[in-house]
Image (cartoon, rainbow, N blue to C red):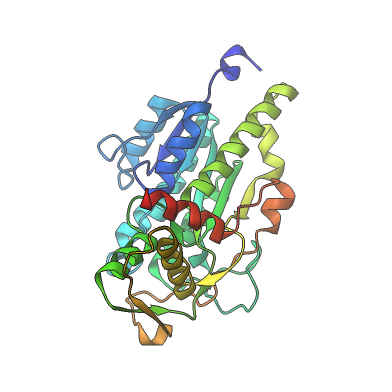
Length: 311
């Protein structure tokens, strides 16, 4: 390995203002030189903009945390969803191959239809029910065609203390209303954005160290374990269960807060533009066995986030 290769890695983060991207900016900052461009510097709907940013910054790691995540809105703007979620990852992968960068890409449980009774493993057939799920699956397939090492982390129900997410919406509505109806027949694992970022930081550090110790390229080290991994919090719940637990945590920390009564309803009682899988549970055994990482139980992480919100 040359002296240049041993230097602090350059890390490009797309979607740096989003939940996962923002968490990555925080956790990866001590590990490398971060470039998290705004849309003015990197427009994911413009292939030339992507190429320009990649070629000028010359990253060793690319964290593609950007996505069109408005699930219902994607049904009415499929071209935009596919441009960001499918076409852009392919171009990023082409540029990563050109400069020898390693690509980490975040995907979703919505690539599955939810018909399986058990948690999904990485090799289960994908069958998305929505434009959003279809566009994210197309992005995964685009990476697989490029012939480069990569990591795709499928996750679910991402939330955090900032941005737009289910947790923040529910806690706001619970304060403003007397009664809430929340779907109770969709099963999944709420996943804290910072848990995903810490996992990513651990992986980056371990592979950087392994490449240095073996005196070989980062791509040589990662190639044997390249591929798709499921990465969600441990445990499971429903959207209703998630809401009830969040409200319980808030009540514990702020006993005087008056909160709404929550009713458990069926998906059929709450129609949306995009269909959601009833089973979003992902089996994360491969992540633990191959990359030696296990995300915490969702209730533990939720407690930390609600505590942060109350402070």
